[in-house]
Image 1 (cartoon, one colour):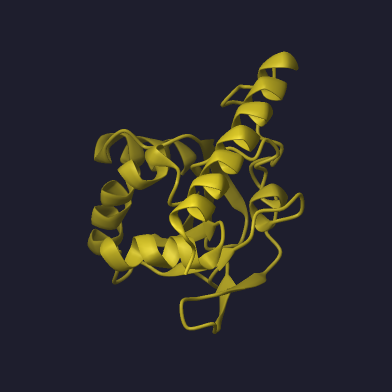
Image 2 (image 1 turned 60 degrees about the vertical axis):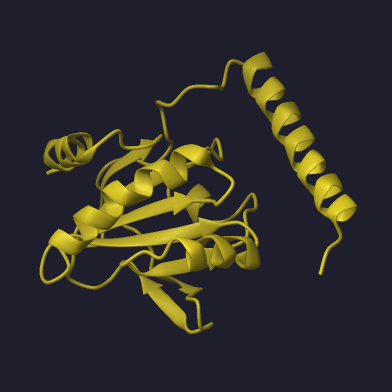
Length: 178
Protein backbone atom coordinates (compact mmCIF):
# COMPACT_ATOMS: atom_id res chain seq x y z
CA UNK A 1 0.00 0.00 0.00
CA UNK A 2 1.11 3.50 -0.72
CA UNK A 3 1.11 5.98 2.09
CA UNK A 4 -0.80 9.23 1.84
CA UNK A 5 2.39 11.31 1.25
CA UNK A 6 3.46 8.90 -1.53
CA UNK A 7 0.05 9.19 -3.20
CA UNK A 8 0.17 12.97 -2.87
CA UNK A 9 3.65 13.11 -4.44
CA UNK A 10 2.50 10.86 -7.29
CA UNK A 11 -0.59 13.01 -7.85
CA UNK A 12 1.44 16.23 -7.78
CA UNK A 13 3.99 14.73 -10.19
CA UNK A 14 1.21 13.76 -12.60
CA UNK A 15 -0.33 17.22 -12.31
CA UNK A 16 3.03 18.88 -12.95
CA UNK A 17 3.62 16.65 -16.00
CA UNK A 18 0.17 17.55 -17.32
CA UNK A 19 0.76 21.27 -16.82
CA UNK A 20 4.14 21.11 -18.57
CA UNK A 21 2.62 19.16 -21.48
CA UNK A 22 -0.33 21.57 -21.67
CA UNK A 23 2.07 24.52 -21.68
CA UNK A 24 4.16 23.01 -24.46
CA UNK A 25 1.07 22.23 -26.52
CA UNK A 26 -0.17 25.79 -26.11
CA UNK A 27 3.30 27.14 -26.90
CA UNK A 28 3.42 25.27 -30.18
CA UNK A 29 -0.28 25.90 -30.97
CA UNK A 30 -0.98 22.17 -31.00
CA UNK A 31 -3.95 22.30 -28.58
CA UNK A 32 -6.53 21.52 -31.20
CA UNK A 33 -9.15 18.80 -31.26
CA UNK A 34 -9.05 18.54 -35.05
CA UNK A 35 -6.52 17.11 -37.41
CA UNK A 36 -5.78 13.60 -36.21
CA UNK A 37 -3.21 11.89 -38.40
CA UNK A 38 -5.19 8.80 -39.41
CA UNK A 39 -7.17 9.07 -42.62
CA UNK A 40 -10.58 7.55 -43.20
CA UNK A 41 -10.22 4.27 -45.09
CA UNK A 42 -6.88 3.36 -43.53
CA UNK A 43 -6.72 -0.38 -42.74
CA UNK A 44 -6.23 -1.13 -39.05
CA UNK A 45 -3.60 -3.77 -38.37
CA UNK A 46 -4.84 -6.36 -35.89
CA UNK A 47 -3.43 -6.03 -32.38
CA UNK A 48 -4.08 -7.58 -28.98
CA UNK A 49 -4.20 -6.09 -25.51
CA UNK A 50 -4.82 -7.81 -22.17
CA UNK A 51 -8.30 -7.82 -20.67
CA UNK A 52 -8.98 -7.72 -16.91
CA UNK A 53 -8.00 -11.37 -16.51
CA UNK A 54 -4.81 -10.90 -18.55
CA UNK A 55 -6.09 -12.77 -21.60
CA UNK A 56 -5.31 -11.22 -24.99
CA UNK A 57 -8.25 -9.39 -26.57
CA UNK A 58 -7.95 -8.98 -30.35
CA UNK A 59 -8.84 -5.73 -32.07
CA UNK A 60 -10.50 -4.95 -34.36
CA UNK A 61 -13.01 -7.81 -34.21
CA UNK A 62 -13.33 -9.59 -37.55
CA UNK A 63 -16.50 -8.77 -39.47
CA UNK A 64 -18.01 -6.36 -36.95
CA UNK A 65 -18.01 -2.58 -36.64
CA UNK A 66 -16.25 -1.46 -33.45
CA UNK A 67 -16.04 1.81 -31.55
CA UNK A 68 -12.69 1.88 -29.75
CA UNK A 69 -12.67 4.41 -26.92
CA UNK A 70 -9.43 5.41 -25.18
CA UNK A 71 -9.82 6.71 -21.65
CA UNK A 72 -8.18 6.98 -18.22
CA UNK A 73 -9.66 7.09 -14.72
CA UNK A 74 -8.08 10.48 -14.02
CA UNK A 75 -9.69 12.00 -17.15
CA UNK A 76 -12.98 13.61 -16.08
CA UNK A 77 -14.38 13.99 -19.65
CA UNK A 78 -13.56 10.29 -20.23
CA UNK A 79 -15.49 9.03 -17.23
CA UNK A 80 -18.31 11.53 -17.85
CA UNK A 81 -18.97 10.02 -21.30
CA UNK A 82 -18.91 6.41 -20.08
CA UNK A 83 -22.66 6.23 -19.29
CA UNK A 84 -23.34 7.31 -22.89
CA UNK A 85 -21.05 4.57 -24.21
CA UNK A 86 -22.53 2.09 -21.72
CA UNK A 87 -26.08 2.77 -22.93
CA UNK A 88 -25.01 2.55 -26.57
CA UNK A 89 -23.16 -0.73 -25.92
CA UNK A 90 -26.23 -2.28 -24.24
CA UNK A 91 -28.50 -1.30 -27.14
CA UNK A 92 -26.06 -2.71 -29.72
CA UNK A 93 -24.73 -5.75 -27.85
CA UNK A 94 -26.37 -8.42 -30.00
CA UNK A 95 -25.53 -7.35 -33.53
CA UNK A 96 -24.67 -3.67 -33.76
CA UNK A 97 -21.50 -1.72 -33.26
CA UNK A 98 -19.33 -3.20 -30.52
CA UNK A 99 -17.82 -0.80 -27.98
CA UNK A 100 -14.39 -1.59 -26.57
CA UNK A 101 -12.71 0.59 -23.97
CA UNK A 102 -8.94 0.87 -23.78
CA UNK A 103 -7.72 2.18 -20.43
CA UNK A 104 -4.57 4.10 -21.23
CA UNK A 105 -2.88 4.14 -17.82
CA UNK A 106 -1.51 1.87 -15.13
CA UNK A 107 -3.83 -1.14 -15.01
CA UNK A 108 -4.35 -1.02 -11.24
CA UNK A 109 -5.69 2.56 -11.43
CA UNK A 110 -8.29 1.80 -14.10
CA UNK A 111 -9.24 -1.52 -12.48
CA UNK A 112 -9.88 0.27 -9.18
CA UNK A 113 -12.11 2.80 -10.94
CA UNK A 114 -13.93 0.06 -12.87
CA UNK A 115 -14.60 -1.95 -9.71
CA UNK A 116 -16.59 1.03 -8.40
CA UNK A 117 -18.13 1.88 -11.81
CA UNK A 118 -18.57 -1.34 -13.82
CA UNK A 119 -19.21 -1.16 -17.56
CA UNK A 120 -20.98 -3.68 -19.77
CA UNK A 121 -18.58 -3.52 -22.69
CA UNK A 122 -15.16 -5.14 -23.04
CA UNK A 123 -12.30 -3.31 -21.39
CA UNK A 124 -8.61 -3.79 -22.15
CA UNK A 125 -5.50 -2.14 -20.74
CA UNK A 126 -2.41 -0.45 -22.15
CA UNK A 127 0.32 1.76 -20.76
CA UNK A 128 0.58 5.12 -22.51
CA UNK A 129 3.70 5.61 -24.61
CA UNK A 130 4.88 7.27 -27.79
CA UNK A 131 3.99 4.05 -29.63
CA UNK A 132 0.79 2.92 -27.90
CA UNK A 133 -2.15 1.80 -30.01
CA UNK A 134 -3.92 5.17 -29.71
CA UNK A 135 -0.97 6.81 -31.47
CA UNK A 136 -1.00 4.21 -34.25
CA UNK A 137 -4.74 4.89 -34.60
CA UNK A 138 -4.19 8.61 -35.11
CA UNK A 139 -4.04 10.12 -31.62
CA UNK A 140 -0.79 11.94 -32.31
CA UNK A 141 -1.45 14.56 -29.62
CA UNK A 142 -2.10 12.03 -26.86
CA UNK A 143 -5.37 13.65 -25.80
CA UNK A 144 -8.19 11.77 -24.07
CA UNK A 145 -10.85 10.71 -24.59
CA UNK A 146 -10.09 9.52 -28.09
CA UNK A 147 -12.44 7.35 -30.16
CA UNK A 148 -11.95 5.42 -33.38
CA UNK A 149 -14.74 3.84 -35.41
CA UNK A 150 -13.51 0.83 -37.37
CA UNK A 151 -15.76 -0.76 -39.97
CA UNK A 152 -16.51 -4.46 -40.33
CA UNK A 153 -13.94 -4.44 -43.16
CA UNK A 154 -11.20 -3.39 -40.71
CA UNK A 155 -10.83 0.16 -42.07
CA UNK A 156 -11.05 3.42 -40.15
CA UNK A 157 -14.41 5.11 -40.62
CA UNK A 158 -13.85 8.08 -38.27
CA UNK A 159 -11.77 9.38 -35.38
CA UNK A 160 -12.70 11.81 -32.65
CA UNK A 161 -10.81 13.63 -29.93
CA UNK A 162 -12.95 14.73 -27.02
CA UNK A 163 -15.99 13.39 -25.22
CA UNK A 164 -19.46 12.68 -26.53
CA UNK A 165 -21.85 15.19 -24.94
CA UNK A 166 -24.88 12.90 -25.07
CA UNK A 167 -26.43 10.00 -26.97
CA UNK A 168 -27.47 12.27 -29.85
CA UNK A 169 -23.88 13.48 -30.23
CA UNK A 170 -22.62 9.89 -30.38
CA UNK A 171 -25.33 8.80 -32.83
CA UNK A 172 -24.70 11.84 -35.02
CA UNK A 173 -20.97 11.11 -35.14
CA UNK A 174 -21.66 7.49 -36.10
CA UNK A 175 -24.16 8.46 -38.80
CA UNK A 176 -21.78 11.01 -40.33
CA UNK A 177 -19.09 8.31 -40.50
CA UNK A 178 -21.28 5.81 -42.32
